[in-house]
Structures are given as C-alpha cells and as structure tokens.
Image (tube, rainbow, N blue to C red; front, top):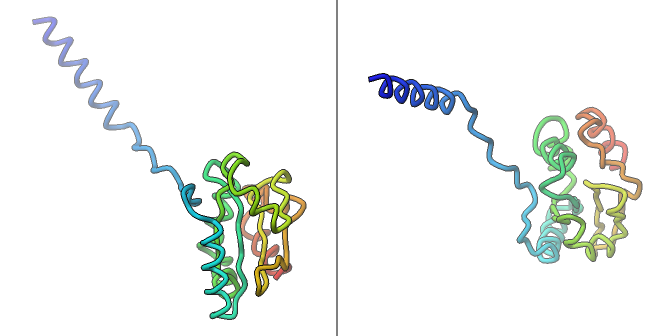
Length: 155
C-alpha cells in the first residue's frame, strides 16, 4: 500500500511540474537559411523599380538578438510605415559569417563590424548607402526611438 501511495505522489508531482512548465516559444527564424539571396535581391529590384522604392538588404542571422530586434522593429511600431513606404526589404542570412559573404562584399558591407547591417540599393543594383561602422549592430540597446531616428535621418 505504501508503494502505491509513493508512486501516486510521484506521478502527481511529475504531472504538476509538467503542467507548470512553460511551453518553449518556437525559435525565431527571420532569416531563411535556404533562400537564394541573389534571386531574392533580383526579385526585390524588379518590385522596387515598379513601385518607386529602393531595395533594403538586411544582412543578419537567426542566432543574432540584435537582428531579431531590428526585424521586429521594422515590422511594427513607428518604423513600419517608414520601411513600407520607402523600401522593398530583402533579408540575407549570413549564418556564422560563412554564408552569402560574397554578396555582402559585392555591396561593400563589412560584416566583421557586426550584424545586422544594411545596404540600400539604387536602381541598377548599385549601393546607394551601406552601414560601414556597425551602426545597427547594437539594435537591442538602441531602442525603437533611436532606430526610427536612424532611418529618418539616413533616408
């Protein structure tokens, strides 16, 4: 009888702990690791030309907290209308600085200064603006106000 009681208590405790444990949130995957970045940029250039906007190429990675903050800020809040009005956005996954590095180099984007980093492409695909000093690499501590000021001031 005592063994049954101990087993029942252990089962109750296990179920109680399991019920209280938060379900882990799905991993954020803002950067498509399997995407063809060159094709995405080509499509964005055609779309931007048709809509009178520029292409905003955001280089980052799924493991990067600053990349996540910039992505979320660009998709909501006061920065969203600025981005939507001026840009067609392409996110390029750089992995652990071992993926799409040649694309970053083509646009003069210094990945070693930190991610996220951006290149704004003019018509024809030439870079009109590039962050060269890690300006967005600390997006977590910048906050929405500073990110909005950066995009308003720069573009």
